[in-house]
Length: 141
Image 1: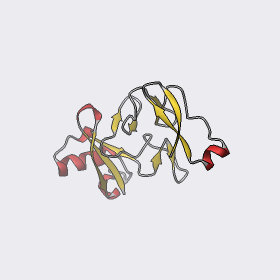
Image 2: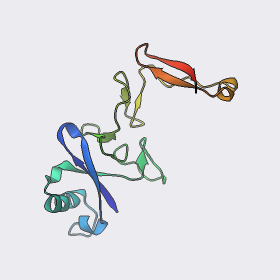
Image 3: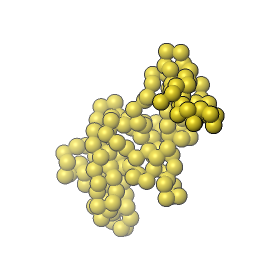
Image 4: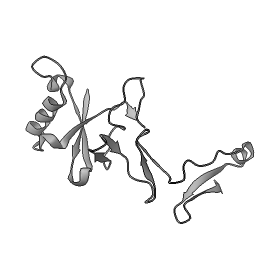
């Protein structure tokens, strides 16, 4: 099965549909995204160029079965299609966070949260992002 995302204004993913692979074969019998896009336009009344193929097995720019990652992340409703970078982005968690193209994920402007010590783990502590202070704050769950 192939998956395609229906793209709306500003690249927003409106829907994700499953398409039988036979419906995207070109004249040589090879899977072709453009053929799938045309099929979806015909059957869903939405422009072919606004259907973008996505990989169910890709998340964080990694393919879960060891294959080649495709377009950063499996698209979900509300994700944004970044045509320039060919990546589907989930919702930005905080206004200050930036795109990490290598991992197709959002990162804080100061990097990852610090590692927890064994004592902090035992106390059920965690770090949470503080947008106002642009810092990772240690909190107890």
